[in-house]
Length: 244
Image: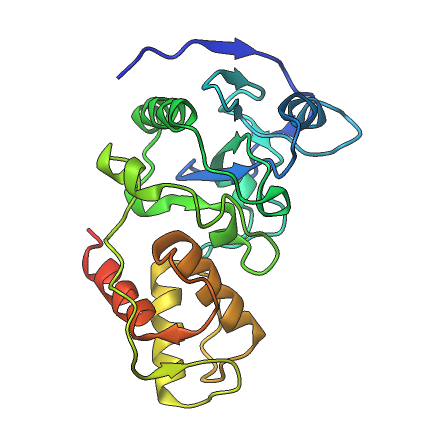
């Protein structure tokens, strides 16, 4: 693995961590077509947003906020019992035009830099594999980054994150918005057990659809539709069984 050279461009947008310890690594995409504009926005005091690191498409890494400070990248978010994700997380912004820009692929050089950077972060903080997360995981329905084209399997192959191969999509029973009953309650309980912010109501409501879509965007990327089909449910079961 290559040695990472990190540029410094301090952002003023940070504060004291309000709770701890740091136990989440949170990955984002910038959702802007111009990388330099995105980087400037993260360093602009008018934006009220920042991250700890920024990764250019060509693999260059920029440090914006010291790791012991609370960067402003997660916004309204929840994972498990934590609702101040900014206080618990190290945030990496990955330059990518996002869904609005046609969902471009993440270049190999950029992903290699993300892997090298993440490995270094994980060596400094006790972040469990299952708490290497997407912004969409902690803010379902509100955020969709880094998106279904982000190569989580490549990170997992490098020892970063918790991952299982998705169960192939096939015909069969499914549950979707409007359904109610014990199967929905069981689905919600499994999602909550993994960490997703969802109430166990037994009703497949909009929130449940958003959380299922967020799960698919990370772990079952071939179809992101918010419908809990056999592939989605079995992948979730396998993921839970693979937890330490």
